[in-house]
Image (tube, rainbow, N blue to C red; front, side, top):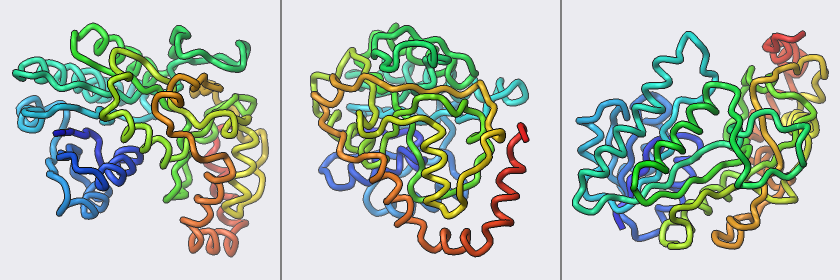
Length: 312
């Protein structure tokens, strides 16, 4: 099968490629060229076809859509999206999928599309039942979530064969980086973690599975990956050697998550193999050298990290 992966060298794309490298599929990678993506691409330059380009560039995109059987659509402008960069983000997210769909329809045999959406589309659900159904109506609050919902609707109306994967909360395993956005989710939010290995397996198992088409799935870790955001922050900060952060540093209301019903996706895709503790263990193992430095300079790093919060 000929498979195009857009956003192929990002956090999720790179893990999907790692799984696909063990298959016999013909893989085409499409991503923006920068320092980080070039570094990831080196792992696959002798295995896959690599095309650099902007998903807004229809002429460049046309060169990679031709003769594809399946497109895994991961390319997206990530948060934060605000009024200052909204126009650019919309071009990437909305114009990008419109370009892809238009070009796909022009193929003699249009490729199927798997689109990666986000749990953030449900917005503020802390007062609702703990487990959110995959059939629940989206209620996006921030621009990122609104763009995801708009893309889902565009794809559903496209007449193409599609599947939508609404992904849970995916912590980065290989890179422990300080991200101010960590302070922008209420601490009492329910989150359902998803290991990078499990999300990659879900995409891999979906490729040749006819049961996924014209459907929407929750892709998340399952019962053993469900906890409060406050508990995840405490456990991950302890894993990094930083210790528990002051609760008053957290006060955001724009980023949302929830517990997700995943029985249907797990039955069809059989991808849930890791727990919360597995995620924490793998984070620790992958960042041993950094954690040693963190512990050495803990007071300075804690002070710097807390200063990134706009609430303290």
